[in-house]
Length: 322
Image (cartoon, rainbow, N blue to C red; front, side):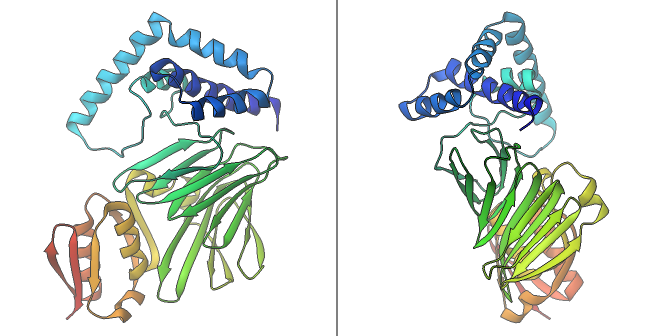
């Protein structure tokens, strides 16, 4: 790993540890995780001490209060994607790092997302994971490997470390990266479970259950269905964005099956949709819809295919033919 990049990552993680220690102290499990992180590099203790001194600086505390007041005012007039903050004092770290405060996790930790929220989590190696709705990932960070198991959808920003491969397993499909940014999604389709990998930066290796292997670079998408691997180029908008559309509250569809759309909406918002006939799930849908307005998305899909949309209760809908 280049020294400059390593220092930048360590500096960010040290700020998060300092914040957590300042606010409420550490449980024995969290203390053990901190000691493991400190032991990996001799200069991390000095970084931690520096950030603890910064957090005690009255000027920094004043800046954090201003950020807090500004954020509260903005939330009162508009809705925005919600992120997970570990503590209110995370605003201090935000003023230092200009980023959402995210947790540092011990090895083997289970990270669970929540419907209506975009979870942002920093692992102990400095990599970042964002989870879409009711998704989850189990992270096992070891000295020789970084292994994650995903259910649902997640976006990964991997801290480069050529000595420790970073792998994400989703439904038996394995995605391996060294230092890159990529999205992994799994959902049901009429043809069976589908895993889709979207690469925004760097290169990843995708291995299917059947042993097929392919490499995908920035600007490419890989879909794995029943062991078969398909390559495609991303839309220009996808290739240029810093984050996937779902992290900003948008559902973007490019000939996705209706069954997968229903799965996406349920995971992100909790909406349930019944189909009057199972074959309707194979209908293809394209477009851009807001996650916080699922009924509008379903109404547009109904108009497109000539379906009838019926509301059966809070967050419960039905689509029927005719």
